Length: 397
Image 1: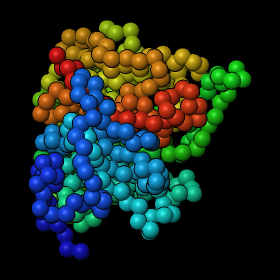
Image 2 (image 1 turned 45 degrees about the vertical axis):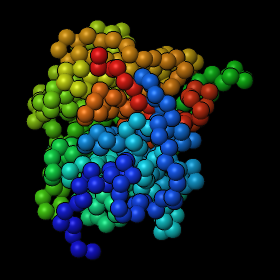
Image 3 (image 1 turned 30 degrees about the vertical axis):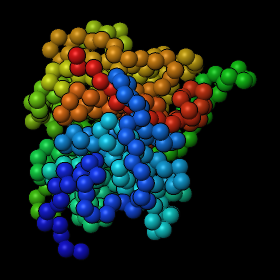
C-alpha cells in the first residue's frame, strides 16, 4: 500500500452530520434512518448501548463526539464511534470484528479527528490469555479508515518511562498531537462489600487488563515526521491519571490520585492547585478546563498501591457520593456541580472547543484508571457495569 501523502480534511468526514456526503457511508454500516437528539436540557443522555460507552472526546472543530463502546454482539471488540454534538443516532463506527480477529480482543484506546486526519490508537491481545497487548498508533483517511499507515508501535521508552498504552489523544496542529502515555498491567482487581441477601462480607477478584494506577501515566506530545511519529514527555506530569489543556493552551492541568496539578504547557515544575472543598480527597477520574476554570470528576473510590488492584472505598454500602466539581485555577474556589449517592461514577469530562458543553461518562469503568467495568457485585454499580455518556450545559457559568 503506498503511503498516505495527505488525509481528507476532517470536516469532509463530518459532512455526514448534515447528510451531504457524496460518497458511501464508511465503516460498513447498514443504511438506516438517522434520529436527532433524544432530549434537551442541562443534562442530556447521549448513549443507550447496553454495555460500556466511554472515553469521549470532541472532534477538533467541535461538531462531533468520538467515543469507545462495547458492541454486545461482539464483546471482545471495543469499537470507536462518532455522535452528533447534540446526541442522536451514531453517525459511523469503526469496529474491527473481521474473521481474522476472532481469536483476539482489540480496543481503540484513543482517537482524534481534526485537520491532520483520523488518528487512532489500537491495542490487541489474545482472547484466552493475559498477555499484555500490542499497541499501534496509525493515521487514516477519514472516509476509508482501513487505508492507513502505522506511525508508531508500543511499548517503547519515552523519557525514561515505558509506555505501552495511549489514551486521550488530541490534535494540536497539522502534524502534532498530545496524549496520555500509560502502562497496562494484568494484576487482579477486587470488589469487597456486604452481600444484600446473606449479609456476609465477600470479596471477588478477577484478573484482567488494568491500567497501572500505582504510578499513573505521563502526558506526552507527539510529532509526525514523514512516515513516523515520535513521542516526548511533558516534564513534570509523571503520575498523571488524566489531563487537560488550560489557560488558552498555556498550561496543562492534570490529576494524580486525589490531587490536581498545573504545569506550563512546555513542561516544568508542577504546582498543586489548592482547593477548599472537603470532597477534594476523593479520587479524581478526569479533568476538563476552559480558560482558568476546570471541571473535575471526584469519586468515592480508592486505589491500593503499590499493586494495580482496585478496591471500593470503605468496602461497604454506601460508598459515599460521586461528584463533578468546578475549580478555579486562580482562586482555588471549589464548588460541587452535580453529585449522586447511587454509586454511579463520573469520569473523563471533556469540554467542547467551541462552546461550554461538557460530555461526561457516567457509570462503568473508572475513566483511564481501568479498562474494565466493575461487574462483580452489580448492587454497587448502575446497571451491572453499564456506562453512558451525558452532555451537560451551564458548568462554566
